[in-house]
Image (cartoon, rainbow, N blue to C red):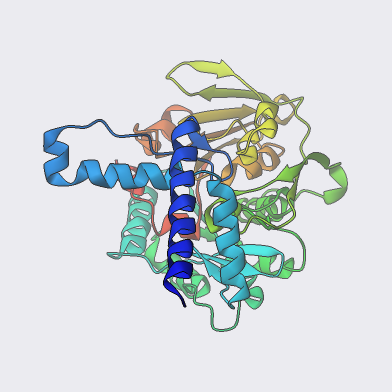
Length: 373
C-alpha cells in the first residue's frame, strides 16, 4: 500500500467523521426515540465538579450515543450484521425466526423468595381469600422456539415450589392452559406481553381457581384495533425488520364503568384509550396504561362479588375478561400505590384478592414488600 493511497484512505475516514460531526451539529436534538420507546440523553450542563467526578464526560458520551445521526438505522444495521455472523441474542432478546423472546435471568439476592414471603404474609394477615397468579413468559411456553443452547431461567421449576413458599395463598395454574395453547398466538411476536387471546386463556384459569363459570370464545367478537404494533422487544433488541403485531380488543368498550386514579382524583375513563393506538406504546391502550388504582364496574353483574388484582401490566388486558364475572374489579399497581392492600380490600368489601404477576416481573420487582403492610 503506497503512502499516497494510505493518505487518501485516512483523508476519506477523517472527512466521514467530520461530516458526521457536522451533521450532528446541524440536526436538532431529539427528546425521545419512538423506535426504542424511551427518552434520549440531552447535553449535560457543565460544571467543574461534574468534570472532576467524571459525570460530565460520561453524560457527553451518552448524549452523542443517543443523538447520533440515523441512530435507529445504524442500530438495525448492526443487528443485521450480527445476525449474518450467526448471532441469535440481541440485548437479552432471542431472535426465533419471526418472533422475539426475552431471556429470563435468574433472580438476584433471593428476591423471588422474598417476594413470595410477602405474598404469604398478606395471605396470613387477611381474612379475605388470597390467590397467586404467576404468568410464565414466552421463554417458558415457547421454549422449543429458542435457539439451540439458549439459556433462560427455569420458570416451571420455580412454579413447582411457589405454592409452598406462598403460604396459605392459593396458586392458580396458568402454566397448564397456556402450554396447552402454545401453538396459538398467545404472546406477541415483538412484545413481552400476552395477546388478548393469551389473556382470555389466563382469565379462564383464574376464574376456575375462583370457582367462577368460564368464558366462552363464542361470546366475543375480536376487533382488530391495530395492525402496526411494534412492542418492547422490537425496541430493545435492535431487530427492526420483523413484521408488526396485530393487536385485538375482545371485550366491547361499552357497558362497563371504568374509573382511574392517576393524580389522586377519580376520573371516568374506559376499557381502552385509543389515543395510544397512534403512538409507539400501543399496549397502553388497554385501560390507558400504568396507573396507581383503577376500578371496573359491571352493572350487569350486580351481586357477583368484588375482586382485587394486585398486578403488573399483564393485568391491563386480562381485567376486561374478569369484569364479565364480577360486579367490580379493582386493580392496584404497587409501583405507584402505597396504601395497605389488605386495608384497601377490607374497606372496599372485596371478596377475593389475586396477586397477578408475570414471573419475570415477580422475580425482579422490589415493590411487593408493600404487601406486608
